[in-house]
Amino acid sequence: MDIIKMARELGKAIQEDDRYLALRLATQSNDEDQALQDMIGEFNLKRVALNQEVQKAEKDQEKMNQLDREIKELYQKIMSYPKMIVYNGAKKEVDAMMNYINRILVMSVNGEDPDSVEMSDVSCTGSCSTCGGCN
Image (tube, rainbow, N blue to C red; front, top):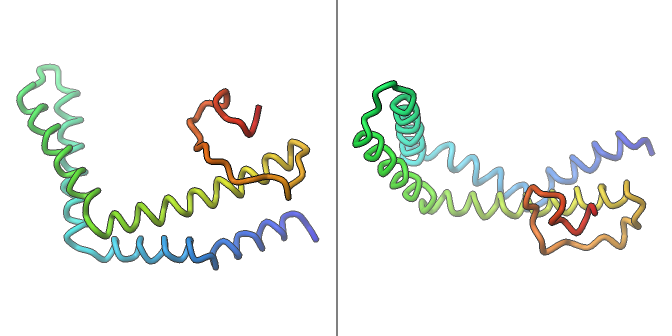
């Protein structure tokens, strides 16, 4: 079988996986939740306002502190929103699956037996020196 065709088949299998489907449902649920979207919109507007204030030659420190507090409060409110908790859990599952798939592929390219590659408990830190998989 052609390697690209196999990759496409893997992509289709991922799209049929329960973890992927749960993420899609959570994403759709969040997209359709007007209260959540309003909070996210307000959060983004406050981030823009803070960024604009930071760029000014004469910064208003009190205003920046207030915006920073409001942004942090909104972030906590968004992240503790029940649908966002479900979304983040589903995303974590898909990310773990994709990291495992990637690990199998990378280790295979490095000459390892694909059947011997196990799920790593260590998450990627962004620094290859801390990774047990590539070094």
